Image (tube, rainbow, N blue to C red):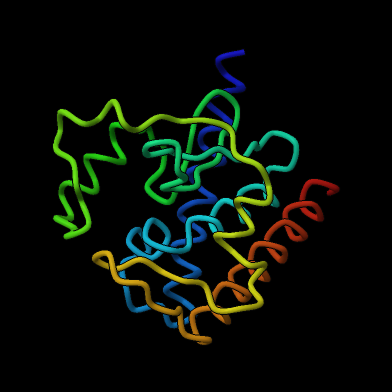
Length: 172
């Protein structure tokens, strides 16, 4: 059982690395961790849901009952672009970024918790790659440029191609 969990964890980590490299390959100039933690977390979750199917369940890190970050539960672990994630590791990331919209300190960690999220809430964070997504950057809303949306579509295509190649390889 533990061996299967280790294998699944490795597959997830390999997929996360593939997504980060695909982002750069398609002209992404920002740090993929920032891109997928600060506005495209729903897209990232969608990539993992498509990649891992029924093994993947959408979750969120909530702050005061509001969705703050979309994550994915695969097996017994939670993931985002940084790999395995917890509410504490996510808050630690935010504190390290020094975002001006932070209204908490390390003592406010209990305001954050992990819970399952409804698919509609993920769509609010992705809009199915079709329309500009509002991205929060230092508390200011900003529309994600169409080039970024095109990049998300290309990553999705790369993942589909990778799955197809893997399936063909597994048939041999």
